[in-house]
Length: 175
Image: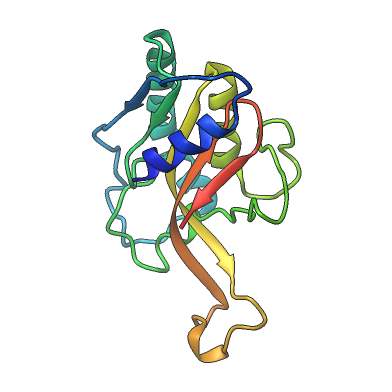
């Protein structure tokens, strides 16, 4: 369904009439954290995620050479699975709401802290002239209007978020 939503989104962004797009879906054997229930530092989480992102980079280049314009990566493909709420902490990035602001992680890398994965995916989309959809763990503070009883004790929500990068602009996402 996300790929369909993205296709409609892409079709609406063009100035000329386009009948179709070439889309690719990539599935890979995720390089997993051997101990996903043990918390790791942000640095160690990034080292782990970079291994999967290196594979994404190779596949984005291959897809672009084969004429793909849209590339969808698998759920949990960057970080893996079987984490606990605390053990995934080092993997989380806060993804700004694209309805409230426009931001290109590739061209404005210093705007937010701890957005290395967003930056890498954004630059990958630009470098290969692709629309990319990737799934990543997202951290969001509970809004002030949220009842304290519905917010986790640490005051933050964690989501599994699909992020779509345009090849030239900012990103969109779906939780």
